[in-house]
Image 1 (tube, one colour):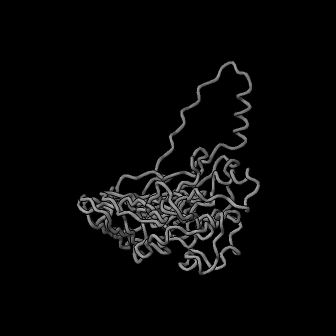
Image 2 (tube, helix red, strand yellow):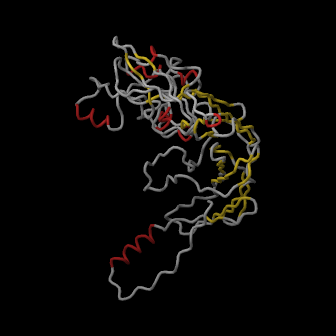
Length: 394
């Protein structure tokens, strides 16, 4: 059972608001892309994702060239240095120069504005052969791609001018870029570059998240699996992670918050503080609401109350909204097979809400019978009874 609650942030108080639907049902085969960041439908998260979605807002709406934003929940916090557009130019001697930041009133806190991108000047070497294989691989990967964030800006491999190159708008204040650090000189040394600074959902096909997707997903140039890698030093990956990588999808893949915001024990009442992400308020502070009552499952008439676990805490400061996603799981006394069993007697309720019954899909037998009926000529066909509408909120 997945439970999503929506709140309006009113001052330092969270007021329950009309519900928003669950986002991005992975069972829908028509979705594109299938692995969109921030899905509500991962059933078994082992920790809580804390995400802040929005923009850096200049104080009082007066343009600034640089500022700092921050976000924190409980004892976890992160800061981001935000800059206006900064062009990169080169001297006659070929040395890069970072331009002065342009004034801004609003900069979205997204991975497109964080450090990353692709240096398209890098060409595949002897490790890719024949040329047709290189072209096929470069449709979804590239040797000049920054594995941590191919969507960003500022990642340079080769020295020398690159028309249109820009600095990232978002940087880690403790690891700011300097002209001498812009070009790595070797695409295999991407792991020495700064980590992207962002509060938003982490895309699925970025390092190190895709490491947990399975044994066949690696950067074009694999990183070392020891303390030379920042992710190992920060505890995001264990030392020797490549030798002990999962054979299938590991639970850590389902965690979509940025590093430092995948939290082990969020239960409600923790303080939240967000600075620099509202056009009128310098800081937004509140305490998380408590979780909903225990979820009650009814399985073949037998009832079981199950506590919820917190999957996601999502704050949208400019909209003044908070989304909390919870999950509850119960073991079934016997197997129920959707597509085989026509009736699956499972209901679930929260507090005094009316129960929501599980609606199994049509059985394979019924689908085959319907397909056969469509191929046989019939003289008349009675109108089908109206189908009950699905109940919302599940």
